[in-house]
Amino acid sequence: MADMEPDETVDSRDSACPGPLMDLVGRIKKSDPGTVLELLTSDEGSKKDVPDWLENTRHDLLEIEDQNGHWAIYVKVN
Image 1 (cartoon, helix red, strand yellow):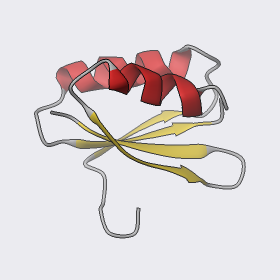
Image 2: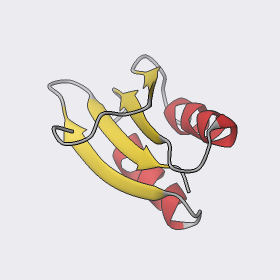
Image 3: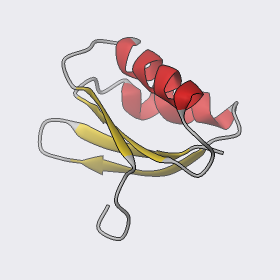
């Protein structure tokens, strides 16, 4: 994200589903409200799984960026 730097990065590029989501959930549980997390994932399913999970939680999806072979998913902890 050009206008916002993440507070923490969760690098799950070598994990298969549901690994990236589980890594993100674990980090969210340890993070303070207002923290911006960047999830790096090479699992294409994460582009659907993470937003679906966030819809059922109080956390915000900020952006999903294609980064040439993997994705960066930005989440704000609420």
